[in-house]
Image (cartoon, rainbow, N blue to C red; front, side, top):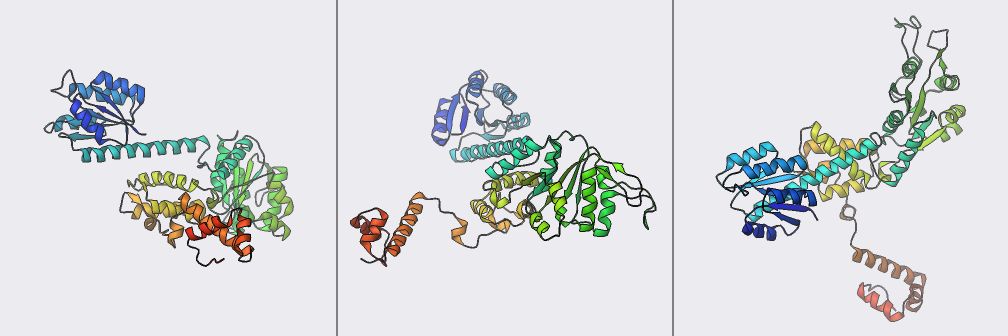
Length: 450
């Protein structure tokens, strides 16, 4: 249970609040010393603090001193100060010192419940954000705890310190560049350049000069000698994204570089040695492409010394919610919004969507939802992911309902296999004939006859 500390020397108010906050684990203190002792022992997330504490109950000096000491010991604790109805000045001073909120007597249980509940929700959000940032910092920007993503992360940790040429395979939008950058950041070359080039986004007639560079006068417009991406990545990591889209004419030249680790600029006559770690990525089936002779087989084996399959978003189960909360926090800051979370229908929609665009699609959906959302929580409508039918929107999690469906299905299947013979169906199901009749009546299966 969530822990709530009530600091008040009035036993009547303590008793009133005790019955009001029935959903929390409650602790009580009458003065500053006992409040600090309870704080150290139980570490409550939320504290209600009466500023009029002994030995100076007529003023707020002791209460404000308690507030300062509490926040010094536990700065993330949400402290709700309680003051007299004409003591707004001290309440504002408490807010300036770091109190979460204030409440003026007399105590109304419904109102104080709303304030406390909101404080606990904020604590929960901050805890989730902290956990997300810890996950992010544990392995670059790779977020997730599903078995599929954890297997991929283990491979990254193993191969990052090596010089092995790695091929990242995965659908578009799965985060191949994030994995490539993480490989670089965890490598011995992390303080050197990370240079990325998308082989599919550059016209074929320009890709060679982008990769290998060119000498002055090599072609019209070559007014000065220019280094290519490979040379720019010297001592660092070269990431060749969408290598499956590389023209065949360039594949042979790239293969020579990978074998010899030297390049020649366009129009050049001398070889230039380049020391880089190479990481490639594609969403294409290179194995099939080598069979169809649209991708060089020798190049395929050269770039795939180690192959890492990056799971699609639909294979990552609850990571969808984890990623959604991470992006929510990120985009709240970017767009100056204060969206708290996701409604139940939004969570169901997120989990049931097929995500053909993977993480990139999820990011786009969340960006537009955060901008358009009118409430405190994002809904399925905000995401434009309203499920097509009610069954899809709400998965069956009720064990009784699941059991009934399973039993009904098994009875019908056994009845069909037994060629509509009740005795044989009962034998197949391992129950007596009277038991089977009872189940048929229970589930109103009027179409089954003896």
